[in-house]
Length: 349
Image (tube, rainbow, N blue to C red; front, side, top):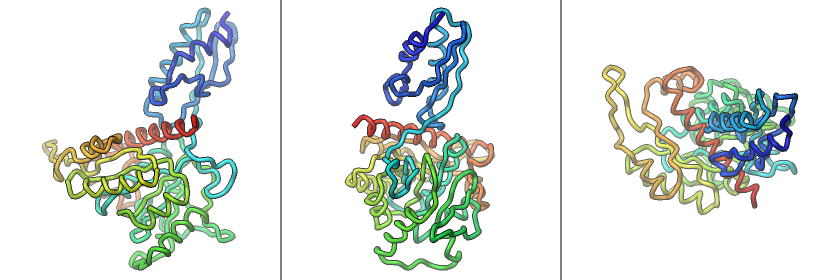
């Protein structure tokens, strides 16, 4: 008859490929129970959006099945998201495990589209997710998430509405569609702090923050106010975009913010009639700056009219089953994996 020691020894041969350690020492195994020739246990992944979920599950199941005397393996898979920040002691954003900034050097690269679909894809995986629209001058997250009503305010705290499984906060809720925000730096910084501190976020695995273009006050305030789990840099392929994206990346490095990687948006266009792929804005720029600056390349997102149409309707691409959703979901898996790596490195210190 197998023992718990035998089972744990077998599971300790299975590693999380991204973190480079075995699943037992990472406390990913719990509830081992043995009844005769049947072994039951729970596998806790470091994120529900684990990019190598199938590989880890198969490895764990095979390892236990190989233990002498085991005839049946009952494995339950759950998740316990690693945190990149210490939120247990209270303070700002208590209950938020990871803050992911989405940034770009310039406007017009589809940064908000990336942020929205990243947040919704993470929520679809089973994570608790919020999105903060910190693009003070162009707050379009409410439109893209399909939330139009002004949120409830209780005791000077905003109760964020939920759309597509994501809690949403934005100054756009409090300004008309045609009203311009004309603020100097200190007011921008104050607004970002207010959105961080006066929103009832509750417990979140990930808070995705859509930053305004450039390297101005909103980005600096966020990076200097709360510990960031990392930043995703968004660019399009052409040199005019990648050169500025590189500057944004350099700024976050100077602020000691982990760089999760570069994603190239509008990488190519596939003709709906003939299927020919056209690189409208040049080719390979995102991958090049990622290589040059020694960061991960998170993938390519094609230019697609349906993504734009869905955004205008307040329905992110990942909210419906379509081919347009696939690259955004793959991006979410990669980002979640990178955040786990950052969190694990922090835990080891």
